Image 1 (cartoon, rainbow, N blue to C red):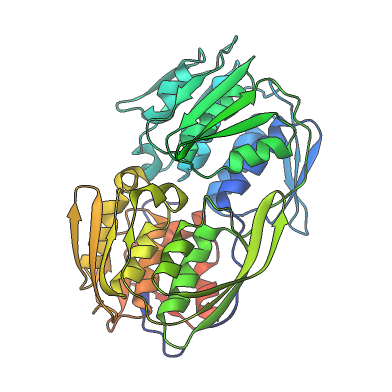
Image 2 (cartoon, rainbow, N blue to C red):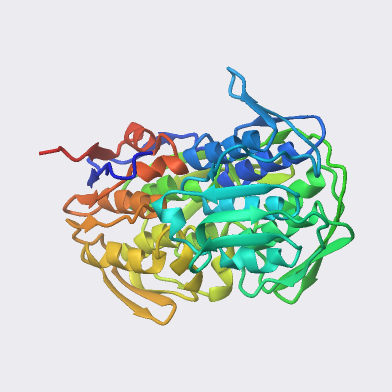
Length: 449
């Protein structure tokens, strides 16, 4: 992607209710992991429903560069012929992870315990984000890391030849850090142990079991202790990727806010460690029905049926953050249209996402007529029960979720809302604008002068 060519979009009030059934992209977190585990397994893994956004395509390219055979059939099924644990080969060129912090951090875990040399970089946004949170624990395996100041990309990695297993307590809830440590443990002898203070999304643990690894999980207070038996022989296992709940959040909130709307979103992942947003919206009075609950590929799945209606303020506890860390910007948009004062607590982790999401979300709201306050790591949103005035130009900071949140807000404000650069939406939700317009939205490119 050309980082210098901005793609501004303008979103105007929907002229009629949003209506229809929409298919959202596959879960990004599961898509990354399916490609990585397929590359580390013996045999051919088939993946159905893989997200084809740029972030995941970067992971596919990285696994090819490390020796796995990764192809896509004409019918959309992906095939990964794996190399087995310890069988990856040294890449001939730099691994460019684009905008994906998940791919970069998880790949650090894999590379730390493979005795090869690799260099990793990313786009301007990813190069500005901290990697120290994975570099520090992974260094204890015997791997060597050389990065820019603050542990930022580009990053050179020399994997450990005789890797040591880790016993690590994650200082703050982070599925990425937990997963990086567990992935490092795959090619280290003995038991790798991770303790997390708050339970975070467990796709890595689920997929480890799916591919044949021995994993135990013990509940410890509000957190968990995970133990992995190192050096398993992972066996290829087909993966069906459910719809991404983080992507479903945007058309879901749009359907709640645009009067008269009724939208169905089938086959959405309902992993309980990913559904904090749905819980918050239900507490706000949202009309969300979950139909046809089932299990696919070891993950719970259901169809969401959403009907517009008034929302009320909510107080969101900090401990809910791990289950909805990516959904705070769109929850803030819903809160801006609700009746009463909403408080979102404990948002420290938002400061180190694709952008400083706490600051970017605050600016998104305040620039469109919403009264908000930041107190420490809490955001306080004063809703009036009606949409704000709008009319703002939102600085997205190359953050796809800020861009999509701005677009959803513009569907209900009196004056249109403009996202200064929406080009990065395709990293996680390819076809987002076309999908939204197909159910009645009014989103268009900004005319160039």
